View 1 (tube, one colour):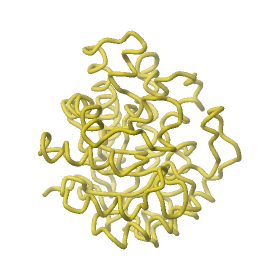
View 2: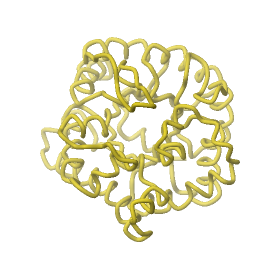
View 3: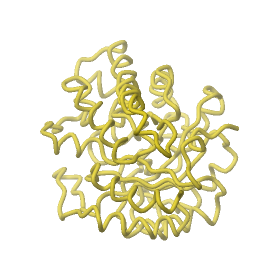
Length: 315
């Protein structure tokens, strides 16, 4: 079964992008909204396209779309109907595709690289709740109920033609199974990665051992990579070790910058340093990560710092 990530790998190294929402905030957007970065699809789509482009220039092999918080339920709460919601989700894919086209139009950008990919972000059910549930899990929903939630989103996003889906910040194993089952039973041509949010060095946000959640995906070949995102950097190396014990799939990680997030006040505390982030990533690579990038509060500068050492090693 074809793995789209293989097309951009150099010696099995793939550089992912960094944060979208916090980068949009850094550029002046107000994301104090239940739609979070999806709000910018309505208000400033050109800025989203520019962020994608800047990540490609920084060295990213994959851009992850601004659809993390996009859901029919979330848009409906803002009075946005089904058809417009579909259009906005598909616009999130097109913006990344347009950024890629602009990047590839300059042949110098492709020196030693293949045209980069677009991964359509599939955020967790908890993101729609906009109350920090993606860092707790425990939705009280069955796999079937989670499939019903994700099904229309997947159909809308896949119709726009991304290279793969990015199931990300999943706090529970049931949500990963819901995505994998949908792909197997209803979207057989689609490929995806699954990335979990974790509360410590061994367990998902809801307390499930990461090893158990990853092992449950072994028989789903459409899931081409598994790993951890939106998690404190200090936990990443042991978590990758747990995943590697039970899975032969490609491993990925894109943790937060190292700052801490208060889900109640929706504020970040601490500071970040691209050099320190890139240095920490050496441990993640040594622990088996083939795909490395950043999540909340990381920037194009972080991805550039990653690329500065990953690419020479990869080539």
